[in-house]
Length: 108
Image 1 (cartoon, rainbow, N blue to C red):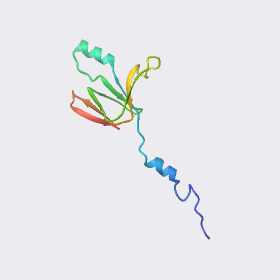
Image 2: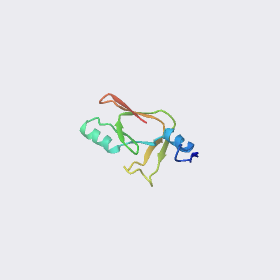
Image 3: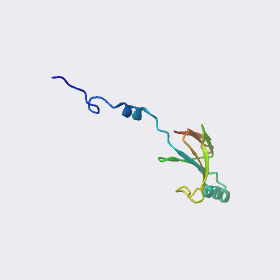
Image 4: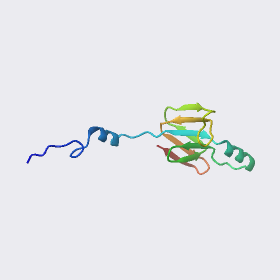
């Protein structure tokens, strides 16, 4: 009996291999939290005011480095879900620095 390969059963389709090997870039939104700025001013604390949001996480820091192109957006009629009306969007890598704990985190 001769067996004829059928696409999808005996071997993966080339498009599927490409999709699985490709690294998907995650969009990041960076904004400044005004409420924390006000709270820091009243209490004398130094909580991080910069937020880097992805669909998975929120990371907070005192400094953020964008390692590639980015866009600054002002959208007063359609703010982010957190209420931010101005933010930075990027698909590039982002480094979040928390100077209080002296740590850094790469956000992919």
